[in-house]
Amino acid sequence: MTGGSTKVQVAVIGAGPAGLMAAEALAAAGAQAHVFDGMPSAGRKFLLAGRGGLNLTHSEPLERFLTRLRPQAPRLERAVRDFSADALRAWAASLGTETFVGTSGRVFPVDMKAAPLLRAWLHRLRGAGVQFHMRHRWQGWDDQGRLVFGTPAGPVPVAARAVVLALGGASWARLGSDGAWVPTLREAGAEVRPLEPSNCGFDVAGGWTGLFREKYAGHPFKSVAITCGGRRQKGEFVATATGVEGSLVYAFSADLRDAITRTGEARFLLDLLPDRSEADVLREVAHPRGSRSLSSHLKGRLGLEGLKMAVLYERLSREDMHDPSRLATAIKALPIVLSAPRPIEEAISSAGGVAWDALDDALMLRHRPGVFCAGEMLDWEAPTGGYLLTASMATGRAAGQGAAAWLATQAHARREGS
Ligand SMILES: Cc1cc2nc3c(=O)[nH]c(=O)nc-3n(C[C@H](O)[C@H](O)[C@H](O)COP(=O)(O)OP(=O)(O)OC[C@H]3O[C@@H](n4cnc5c(N)ncnc54)[C@H](O)[C@@H]3O)c2cc1C
Image (cartoon, rainbow, N blue to C red; front, side, top):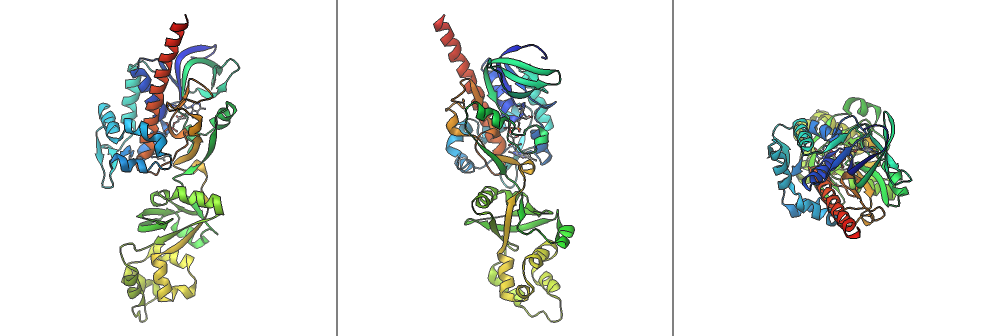
């Protein structure tokens, strides 16, 4: 489809999990869906997620699942109830991908891969009549209300009766989602909250010393705990050249990011030995060490070495290191001060997006009847754990169903009018 003007019944823009799910719902309702994407192939971020094993969803009870979508859970609830973790697992199975529940409750495909699932999905969609138009980058509407796509053959206008926008956020822009739609939708009268990094790394205030950076960037803090905002969680994260990143940091990233926005910095307390009490740690630290160096003393008595030792030397004064009480306190609650989130390009996902007040219950833009929005481009965020894919697909499905219902009412109105 290049050159000239084309008419389609429904244009789904964005071939990520949200857009593909919208196309599936439209096809199931008998609508003719055309999927457009700026990239040469579909589902690039979905495939990237596959490199980490593709955490599709989470097996915890739905009520608990919904709390992970706070503060936007009430807005997402209906879509997620209609396409819950169980429904998602059944959907994957219907495409030949069996899933299993990992020890953390997270759900993965048995083969831990995204490519076979995506391949089967695209095959089934094509079989259901969905048509794909890749290398079609949506640029907005022209003065006749047609969608305009930039293509290798030049601009292509497309007239569509209904549209589902599923354009993603702005992380990993090279995979296709770059947030360039934000000004376009604002100009169309929709409120869009600024896109911000979510599930992201942070720079530590003042940076790490050169020595620490050279030796430990990329090394993991294993079996540690973070306390922040009254919440404590055990897990792992990684020291980077400029700060910290990884799943345990992501779990706090919304609070940390918001604190930095409010006050210019954020801090968390790092417990290097979460399975030992402070009294226990103090007893071991204060144990006479004879002629042993402090490092071998701490390694011998508490198993502290490598990165865990280095971060103590990095953050404590010489006096603190040699004061058993202060050292024990630091081992259990070392303050790590952060100055900035890493750029959104590096984040796992985005916060912000199309404001809920700009949408009706069917996810249709109030200012643009017939245009629906879905997936990560909506204003919500969630931690890692499969919540992102589940909510993206659930809202994609809801938007597709909404568009199908809207088409039906329009057809009815046309019949009444004729
Ligand atoms: C490294 C990494 C690992 C992840 N792992 C997981 C995981 O294991 N579990 C999980 O739940 N989530 C994971 N996520 C997050 C998850 O992949 C996203 O939340 C999800 O892909 C969002 O789906 P979406 O369809 O809304 O957007 P996207 O997947 O971003 O798709 C949007 C599509 O829109 C297209 N597009 C954008 N703008 C235009 C335009 N102007 N014109 C035409 N096309 C356009 C893009 O090319 C893209 O194909 C991971 C993310 C990353 C970066």
